[in-house]
Length: 259
Length: 284
Image (tube, one colour):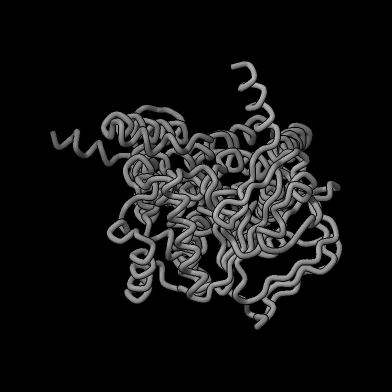
């Protein structure tokens, strides 16, 4: 069964000053989608997410959203000053700024926030200053803040950038759980094997959409070379595609010959 | 002994001093309150620039014989909004653009006063502040802006906090960030307008930065910063003004020196914890 359309980008182009970041994209997110956007640096991944969020306006085409669509945004952790004088609870409660009138977090909001924090494995940390958290915990605080807004669509920009393997697994499990609970998800990532290959739907982007489909259909040497501009090989391991850097394999072969 | 004790109250026998110390104390608290946003948003250069821009408006209103609060007020608020937009959009290098706009306004003010005004006296009064010219209207004006600022900061506390910490996500979450920033710039412009005659153009940015920086060293809470910083600002202003009478020094300079002294003491007393907290304020 096909879910209702949450966001539709039609023939959309976005630019910074006069430089086109994405060109004539047709792209739809439906209820129940779990989409990963992959592409090289500067390919327009973050621009696409920002256009969906409404932070930037297309110069051509349009973005149509379901009326009253609630979106939660999880930016990259380095976009904020983690030395800022706020606690974990205050950060989580921020997303109700447009509705909460009282300066202090209310009892109900506190109870809701504690549930979300507990759910994300951050129970007991609500009064900690955000600087005292590990990188993985900081990432989860951002997810908690987005979830506190009760989003229908969760938008994440590079959620596993700069985190260790364990944290990456935690993030992936968390997103899978949220998706099972009915939250639609779109994220951008550089992590082809650790994250993208596990998702049900992948979009390869390099200013334009190169391919859109399941990882098995999308992660092919031809699509990857067209997307990243470099040769890559794809192996199938346990029914899942594993991307191998073609240049890396070549170097390994030359090295083994030297040995 | 009683003679010495009575001497301590001598400055309060003069109406001009009482007016000056009331305006300075409220101004210190007001600058301390708004300074929290200035420091945490990395806008110290904007406070400096705004005070220079308002100077242009003050000079123009003096030359054109327009009421100071009307002329400098319109000029200052307009400058504040323009500066805020330039800083937000970062289209043409915000630092350079703000530098050009504000120093041009400052230079225009100087030129106008040189050409048409009673140059030296007026310029010194506006640059370094003066307690002599403080009138009842100044007390009313600074009190009105202080009350307005407190009401707005309390009513929009969450939106101000979110827009200061993470403007992009705040925007996505329904906070009207551009409006909040325009409001903050408007309040800053009004603050500079009503305090400039006592504190002076050149030193007002210090009163925006020092109390908030001291408060940051003392607490890890945004909410507590919002009341610690005004207290520090008010205490610096009151003691600075009071001591300036006996030391026969510039009132505004003594106010800033008192703030600086508090900064040094707190920096020393809070040790590594305070230094770590303030290390994030790399822009000041």
